[in-house]
Amino acid sequence: MNQPAIVRLENVTKVYGNKTIGLDHVTTNIHKGEFVFLIGASGAGKSTFLKLLFREEKPTSGKIYVGNKNISLLKAKELNILRKNIGVVFQDFRLLEDRTAYENIAYAMEVLGYSKKDIIDRVPKILKKVGMIHRQDHYPQQLSGGEQQRIAIGRAIINSPKILLADEPSGNVDPSTAVEIMDIFKEINSVGTTIIMATHDRFIVDQLAKRVLELKKGKITRDQEGGRYTYES
Amino acid sequence: MNLKKIGYFINQALKNMARNKVMSISTVLTVSISLFIVGAFIIFILNAGIFIKTQSDKTQLSVFVDTNYTEQQALAVEDKLKNIADVESVTYKSKQQAMDEMISKQGGAEQWKQLFGDDNPMPYTFIITGSDNTKLEAISADASKIEGVYKVDFAKDLVNKLTGIVNAVRIGGIVVVIILFLIAIFLISTTIKLSLYAKRKEIQVMKYVGSSNSFIQGPFLTSGMLLGFLGAVVSSVVLALSYKFSMDKATEIQFLNLSFNGLQIALVVVLLLISGIFVGALGSYLSLRKYLEV
Image 1 (tube, helix red, strand yellow):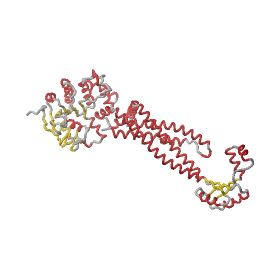
Image 2 (tube, helix red, strand yellow; image 1 turned 180 degrees about the vertical axis):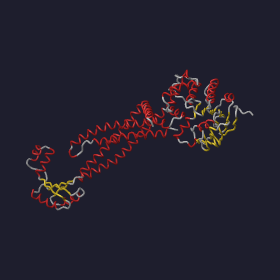
Image 3 (cartoon, each protein chain N blue to C red; image 1 turned 135 degrees about the vertical axis):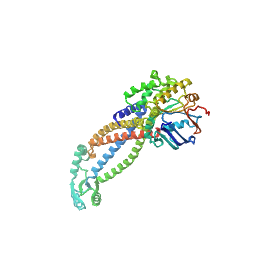
């Protein structure tokens, strides 16, 4: 990869308050436009890795660079700049139940200070991108898991972030829906967005054949380009 | 900070309050009761101060001569009074003058006639003017020693007593005011905590998409300030009305020498409004700091 590193971890360790080790001296680079799978057993440090990147958590030691910024040094009021450039998608979608699909995305734009005109203009485009325009007036409860995840992805990309983090995005959907959701991620990736995805989904990892970072007890035990879920030499 | 953003904050703040009506109303009422007491306290202290000042500025004292003395014996006292240091002038007031003065002030000439017939129970009085009000105590002490003087009256006694009372009220009042402020702050912070809880999912979304902190906190801070402000408005209205009413009463009592003072109540109202907003801001700030994770 000739692209500059967009994410750089230097000897990063995260120990939680209860002495649980999240990450243990991790050093790695992720380049602009890459699609990276984080795999490993539960508790191996996948979620910690993601949380550190958008400063949900702070590292205990080591440095984390996003772009050229050491994000451990960001002050609370500067965090929003980091987060505007990083989209996040969760396994449990985290949509607002009392708002429709359309309103969920519109709300995110509203709280970012977009004008009404921008919102009316942009929300349908995003809904089309994630294939949900026909369901825009439905509430999350009326939507399937896969549909909810599409909305959540739509919400995560309203700022056209440079990096999209996904924590088990296909964990709550059936296998065929998972494939459809991966197609959306692939498309987002194809326009240059860096994607870092924690997953347990063997099928997806094997099918996409992207870079795989395997974590075990907070350490990177494998970093393989075009890797599969299970290591084979 | 632009107008659009402030409009958004106020809009959101009103929605927060509407969502939590009972809590919001009881908070506004508690704040208004607290601020009313604060305002009433300030007005009391101010007016007590004014009253004490006018009393202690008086440089006169009254000396009463034994009523069994003949007028001639009484007049003999006058020379002795004039000899006291720092006495500037001594004015004699006969029994008849004293009686006339009292009747003109208080009325009731008929009743006096019925009670005392032609007798005049009023004492012979000398009004002494001292060179300045700090000398009155010494003059009073000297005058009391003169034979035939049975009583010396001067405002200082009253002033001392009043000052004691006012000081006690001031100390007690400050303690009460602090407690009331703490209660108001606590209630506002609890109300904000509830709104934060009600909107926790929205807050999470705002955080993830990268809303600025001011955008996330603004509506809650505005809610708190609005609650405080509304409480202050309610207390100001009630206080201004009570002030008008009690000053109208006070004016009737000449001795008090107090009257309605528009500037005074205006200042207190401004102070209450600022306090209300401040208490609201502080209450919500405390909740935001404690419960809002960034």
